[in-house]
Image 1 (cartoon, rainbow, N blue to C red):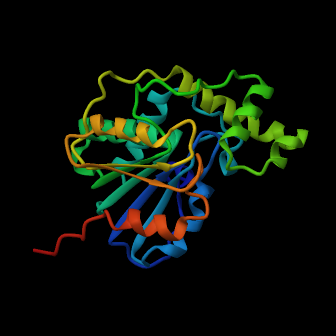
Image 2 (cartoon, rainbow, N blue to C red):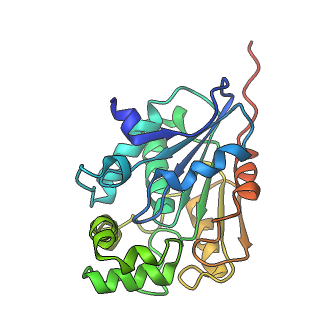
Image 3 (cartoon, one colour):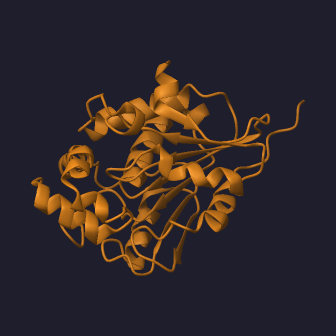
Length: 253
């Protein structure tokens, strides 16, 4: 399996693509979180989800615990894709990884920049958290995961399942704890849209406005009913919204 195939999971149909969405998952999450989007997208929209090491089909690989290392890897993958109008979407930790990855593209491969960045359920880099990240012991991680929601509570009630999911979550929380973004944030040369749930205690609607400082282009924000995982069950509304931000491909000369 190639590096690109390990890192990027393709969930779209096989029609020739005219646009692309690249999704980045939350802490402890994997690419399969976006599998359900495909049936709500046009047949010519390619849907790719980033699979971080240390989870799902990459479970045997060590997790990456450095934001710089992870963003470098994702940026290199994005730079190597065929040229298509592209939109990038990141949820929670994925929003920060997406920002750092796109920032690297702006510096090293501007032709590969996406047309639009969507960030979800996270404040902008460097914003003080309303609730601190958890300690790394099992009980603290389980309590944090349950507060966030999103996963079946039985996952954390069964010791054999906890042993599978907690190392990944622990590594991702360590990555976030050690993350030191540039301040003030470097502005990206593309539009940014921040999305979130109106009942997300960790990222309330007012926190979404912090992303305005990360772009020199247009900024918008929008809230939806729900908590941190407001997007679950809303694929039919969200996927077309993201796809619509990809510009039509240029006509041949």
